[in-house]
Amino acid sequence: MLQDIVAGWIAVAGRCAYDHIGELPHRIYENLRGRRPIGELVQVWEERGAVMGVTINLRFGCAFDVFTAPALRGTAAEEAMLRHAAYVTEHAADEDEEFVLTDCFDCDTVRAKLLEELGFERFRTWDTVNELSLPSADAVVLPDVEGFEIRPAVFADAKALAVAHNGAFGDSWTGEQYRAEVMVKPGYDPTHEIVAVAPDGRIAAFCVYWTDALNKLGHFEPVGTHPDFQRRGLGKAVMAYAVHEMAEAGMSTVTVNHNAENSAAAALYASLGFTPAGSTSGYRRPRSAPASSAASSAAP
Image (tube, rainbow, N blue to C red):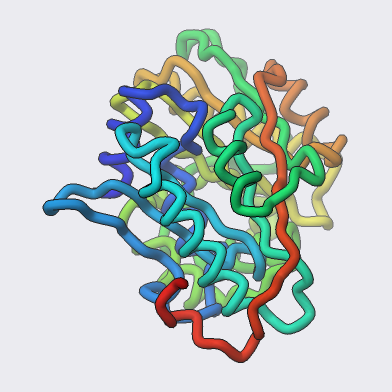
């Protein structure tokens, strides 16, 4: 439901204030895993039964996201959502977190103005946003990586996927956790996780692609290669397979973001034809709330 609603907001207002709808399940299921009950960290804001906002708190231990309906952009309602998200995040963060963080697209001057009014300051370029106009599916070249099978994931891959994600990102998934907390959740489709399977059965590389049928937008998040298999073209191979699938599904554009300081990711995406199309800026505010305060307390 939330994905459909945010897709509608993008159709009305464009992407400048909104991440791809695939980021919603990814951030809720993967970024918040094991932190707190989801109901404490994700809020849906409604007015007369209509969803007007979504806030996701405590990503990376100290960051939050706020998605607001176009009609409320720049209003006191959006400011209230930002205040609440900052409050929940800073009160739930570990004691060693010095700041509460968020980001916004550089084109989103409305959000930047509100953040500055709330005492946040821009401190760095956060992500580079890369974009690719999709050719026809027939025009997509699928790399042949000798000895490796490139295919969609199945539920039986859960254990191998957990190992691959742990190796790529330093996570601590078990196969049971990855299946229960990601693969079977609403909004996630395991056939949209493309894997490169090594001859010994290990998953060497993977990518998850997301589609927004309303806006014909595809998106990658995450993309990873296990350290044992890096520099073999496997990341490019799984992404090319996914690009073909997105073109087949009628997407016209696909995006992928990467940390602005990650030159290896920039090179990988450029090799597939992606070009920089924008960036996001990180904003932070010194943390003032005591760590022992309850995250579920009412915002001031």
